View 1: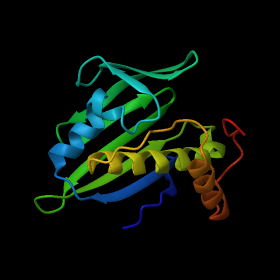
View 2: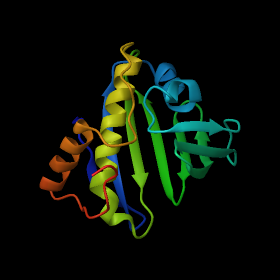
View 3: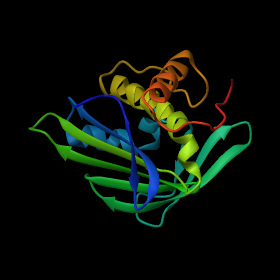
View 4: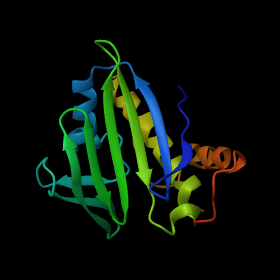
Length: 172
């Protein structure tokens, strides 16, 4: 299993996917991906969640007046959490791997015109998922939804690997 994401398609739409093995039980990872207080340690923006149920409204506040609306689309506690992120869909699936580890599948399905955003999106989530792993291990690092040297390095790696690019990168 690799820490790197892959470019793929889901229902003929461009998507990025990460599969990671986390050395933490499913319950801990579930809290990390559904509790707004835990999301603050790794998610690229502040998350408001109007309940943990299908149809619940979500709000993603990046600061500076940039806000995306969302909605919980799927929920199967503690296995699957999918939500609309603006025009995109993000799906997280958790599977136990023994008693104390979790296999995380993280898929971000981009809107129809979103192929050019694949490398940018993949780099951003790579950095965020690294921050999630650090937070779960008790050594949180500051999440960053914006530009950072690490995000730029990951972006360059994905572009070099042939992931579609072309969308503007914030801060560059």
